[in-house]
Structures are given as C-alpha cells and as structure tokens.
Picture 1 (cartoon, rainbow, N blue to C red):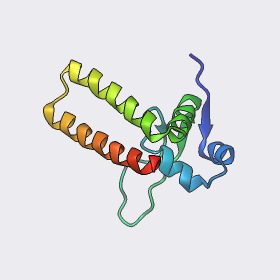
Picture 2 (cartoon, one colour; picture 1 turned 30 degrees about the vertical axis):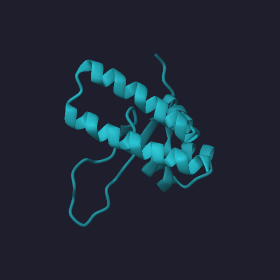
Picture 3 (cartoon, rainbow, N blue to C red; picture 1 turned 90 degrees about the vertical axis):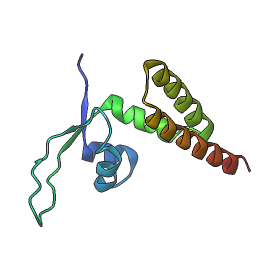
Picture 4 (cartoon, one colour; picture 1 turned 60 degrees about the vertical axis):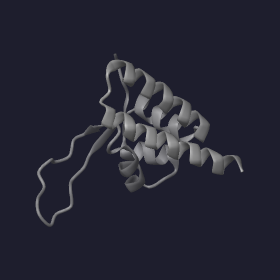
Length: 111
C-alpha cells in the first residue's frame, strides 16, 4: 500500500483555511500521524507536526458534506454493529443520546 501523506500546509491550501484550523480539524482523527513532541513542558507551546493521509482528508471532507439525516443513518448502522459485538450498555446509552441530538438537529434543519 502506497499511501500519500499531506502536510498541514498542503491541506490548508486545498481547503482554503489556516494551518491552525487544519491542526484542530485533524489532530484527533484516526490515521493522522503526529510527529510532535509528546512531553508536556510547563509553560511552553506543544510542538506539533502532523502528516495526514489522503484517505483521512477524503473521509473528513465527506463527513463535513453530509446532511444531518446521513449522519443519523451512519450512526445507527455503526451502533447496530457495535451492539451485535457486545458494546457496553453505558456506551450504547451515550450513543442513543447522540442519536436523539441528531434527531433534534434534523428537525431544525427541515424547518
């Protein structure tokens, strides 16, 4: 597999946003490689170098372009699969709360 990795600057230029925005958008995304220092030095800004796979950029862009109803159906499918796998009840109840929130968002969106 020959995955292409993009720098923060490349993604920022592609999306027409600042580098800081890209760092915030992608820092916690699965698949993104963080080459920065892990140690937390008191009083100093964290040094962060991200490498973002093209597939992750595509995934985030697709998710951003989804309508609330698409988010809900994606969440319901994921939740059903996880419940079959034996997702703990506490986690399942949290995702049901998210599902309810998406219902409310969908109602507002359809007004």
